[in-house]
Image 1 (cartoon, rainbow, N blue to C red):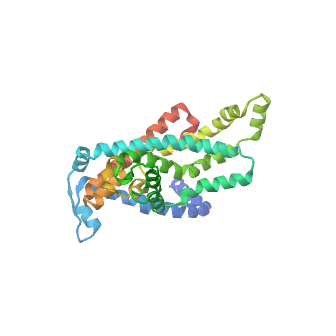
Image 2 (cartoon, one colour):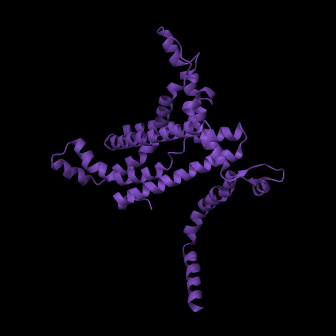
Image 3 (cartoon, rainbow, N blue to C red):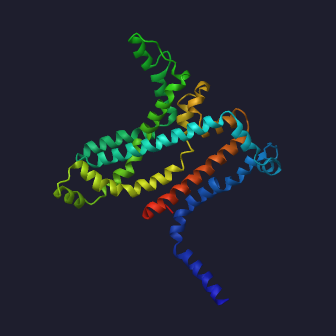
Length: 316
């Protein structure tokens, strides 16, 4: 009994000693519990034929009939399934590769600049698109792609060509969406690599210069090895987002055009349309649960692979 009381007192004493730190993390912890952990209970809807009752959501949740995996089967057998998976994975892998390449390249380039005033100008200009919402950018995109008054069509017709109805031409949208997605997030994604490159001890570069290394060899043999652990960590974190897409980019930018679904439909837009247009709460929840589960598996698998290859770079 004395040992148990001692352990209990020890735990209470630790809480008292670390009360300041616990208070600091309390708001974030409460936010996670209220908005992430408690809503997990609602995933029951994915296995139900959900019928909303006037008694409220919780009453409906616990009194709707169970149908097992029928919602998942219906989703798998629907004509939209392969379109959704193809677009989500294809765009996700493309964004992952391009964002890593351009973000690391931009971070290294900015770290090599010696004019601090110009560096601040470049950083501000690259970060500015990140703070613009997709709703605002949709109007800018429409100003370029409008069928009758768009800048691009104005140029085409001025040169004797025929105007293109971009919002009814699915083939042109993969390039547009990829360009906009990379352009908007490039400045933000490069900050971490820029900060890592700036934290490298200058003596490493001095030693490389003494050995006769040119600028590319310095980047290859000094900068990149120091950036690799951070890049690996970011890769693990981002790999789970392959099955997630930016809703604003894929829904707001194409102006929710039905003719573009073959190239703009992803998991996030599919869930939204299933919920708002078809009022199918069960299938939309099943789609979201599948999306989250696959993302979880991707993170775990990637971390295990990295842990074997680079034990120091593993996330957990």
